[in-house]
Length: 342
Image (cartoon, rainbow, N blue to C red; front, side, top):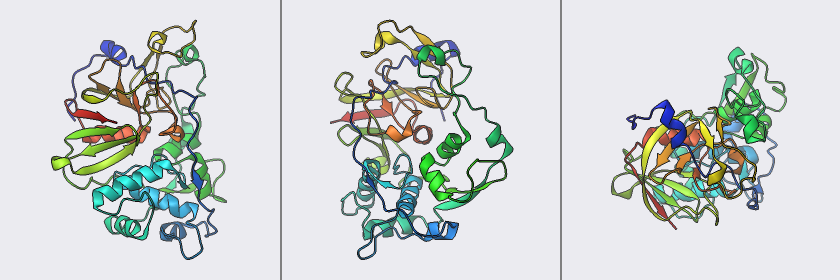
C-alpha cells in the first residue's frame, strides 16, 4: 500500500497525539447479556447455533458470538466478539442492514440473519492449536505510569490469553467460554475453538473515502457512489477535546508506531508529568497502527483496551480496535478524505 515517506526521526513528532489517553469519566453503556448457552462445547454446535431466537427463548451467548463473527468477516465490525447484545453489535447490525438494503432496526432479526448466512456460508468457528511461539511471548506487564512505560523496550501483550484473544478478535472471557473444559493454562499443543476471522474482500469494489458519524460513534468506509463497504465502532473525543466537523485527510500511515506522551497536549495530565517516548507494541497507547490526519497531532489508531471501544471518551483522536485499525489500513491510503459529521 502506498504511504507518504516518514523517517524514524519524524515518526515521534507525527505521533504527538492528543487523543491516546482515554478519559475514565464516561459511564459505560449498558449491554444486555445474552443467555448462557446450554449447547455442548463442540465446534459443530457453535457453528450450528441459531442466530434468531425460537419461541419464548433468548439467543444464546454463543449464537450472538456467531453473528458477531459473520459481521466481522463482512467488514461490519462489532468490535470485540464477546457474546453480548451491546451497542457495538447494534452499530454493526445497523451498518450491515443499511448496506444490504434491509429494514434498519439494529436487531438480529430473521431477514438480517438470513442475509448474513447467505453472504458467508463458512463456519464461524474453527480450531487452533497453541504453538511454542505463542507460549514463548514475550509477555510484559504494562505499568500504569507513562514514565515507567517509557523504560520498556516494547509494549507487549501481558499474557498469552490476551494475545490469543486479540488475534481472534474476541474477549478473553468469550475465549474461555468457547473452551470450557478444554484448556485453562494455554499450553503448547492445546487445541482451542476460536472465531474464524479470515479476511474476506468487502462487497462493492474499492474504497474511496471515509465518513465518521460522531453521534453513532461509527466510522464508515465508502466506495463509488457512496456505497457502504464496511463500518467500524470507534471512540472519539469528549467535550474537552471534541472531534471537529468537516473534512480532513489521511496524510501518513505508520505500522507499529512509537508514542510521544506530551502532557502539554493533554488537558487532564498531572502537573508534574514529563514528556516521554513509549516504544511500539500492541499495548502502546496508540496500538499497532497509526493513520495520521491533516489536523496536527490527530489520527485514527488502535487501542490496547478493545473492551472500552465505543464506550469511553478519548482526548481527541479516533480509536479503533487494533485489528480494525490494521484492516482499515488495507482499504485506505494517504490522500483519502475523512468527512466528520455530527
